[in-house]
Length: 307
Image (cartoon, rainbow, N blue to C red):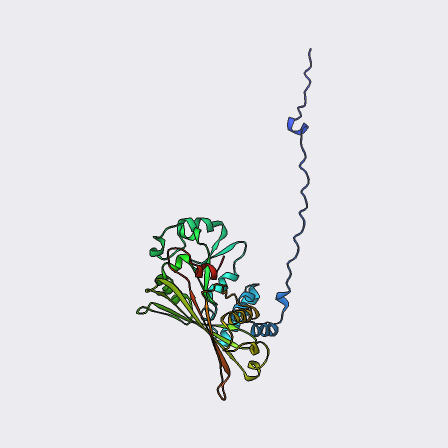
């Protein structure tokens, strides 16, 4: 008789079993520095007092704790953030590798969408401006500083009424007069030696068909400051070129972004010191600029714009 032997079957998957490699140990992420979290509140408040409104806001955006201290500081001192911060200068500083500032709509856009926004005209809220030639911004992609906290592009200069109305809504202490079609704005520049007030008037001259800007810069200082240091070099006897050189040096010391070109058509006039008993000394400098018409950039525009 034949005897049947029982065979044992080994699964094929057990024969060719592949062992999974051991999991790799990922390098530990470096611990983030928490130095700003350790600063006492008293020192943070002292830092806020020493900084300007713009620098204080940028410093508060460093971390969440400083931002919370910034909000509390403004409430205690009754500071309205939207009314004290120059919008244009703040948005310029917030530009980085992810965000870019648009001079047409005065907002921040992601750099990944920036090219599509420029072609699609989505960022411009003014329908009258969007009807213009789309190549205007690409051919003349530059700007001129109207005052220390506002600038204008060549495309906006072609439509001054829409530009003035938009600036009136965003800038503090600004107004637009419809009858004279004049935009007026008052701003300040911080300098350790003097208080500086800039009264700006901008209008479109119908006679010459050009865009004109006038800046009345008032410097207010004490008697000791007026007779020493930088102010000894200024007087009403200076020529236009000497006044221009002194004014640019003053803005550099104040670390102001207000750009004034070297165009020969710019007109400067120094009115000298105004001395009154019991009051601070002050003197005035008038800056007048003719930025040309709206068809093509003029010498006055090219000389005052920074790319």
